[in-house]
Image 1 (cartoon, rainbow, N blue to C red):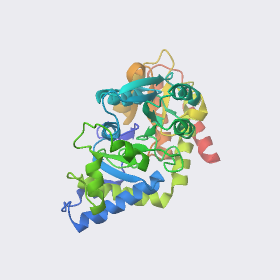
Image 2: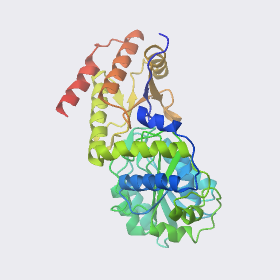
Image 3: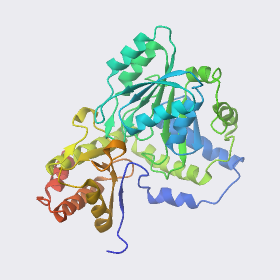
Image 4: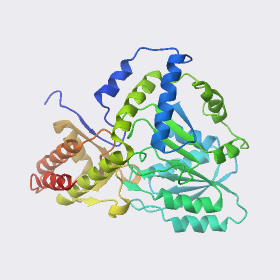
Length: 385
């Protein structure tokens, strides 16, 4: 069928509300003017509200990975020791970024599909009697595996040691609770293209007072991401380099929607759709990479199809015949799983439509499927609320 309506069911970039998309057509203004300062301050205040922080906050022209690089490049110099907690592809990326800036990375890797164990982290930090470990890098939500870490518990362990707590919250923020100030998180990165419901292009970073002390004494190798430059311009409602004006307009509009909904309802929405997706997968006899519901991601569900089903063939059929785009496996999971997002601007009927397409695709691939079984499972979850 030509001109299929597209259902983008991947964990980034996520769907964008029409009113947010339209703000991208806003005319250009002087980025060093009172007009932009008003937008700038509105966006910074709105994002801080959702971060639950009073810390300094900066917004770069970058993807979430740019925000991670900004975090690392300002605190890690050659030979600095950092612990990289990894439960998947993005945890490994965080480690690679630290190595790129000369950091001596102590990897703490866990099996893909499981969450990090705070006790294992404590063992490493307790052994650091000379306090040489400068920071601990951790991922809130691992989109490659559909698992969330217990950031609160991990942070408690790190605080007892004294190292900086650096969190990749790019895909987890607003899907899973994250209390930046209450949990003492020093640097937290996120991106516009996830739960914020804005196109890709804005990397976001919060910085604590404790982190600033480290930044000021680190032999840093950065220019565009030099946080001391960003800090100097922020009080004037400016960025040191030209901001992505259109994306700021879009973020301002999205923040109005998010404020109106409220953090508690945003989090509850993601949890409900997570339950619906997991219930639907089980109804079809699929496996779940994250078997434990407690650590399962509210942003994305990683699904393991039966051995006789080609995950890529299933994805291709869903996309080309039904307009449903599912995410594939990453790294060592490529071709072995597929992932369905319930992050950001995705609603109940999007999940129903996606699984209805999966059912039909499975049937066309020769699998015995009870049509409507996953849809029924979703409906039962949604009706319970």
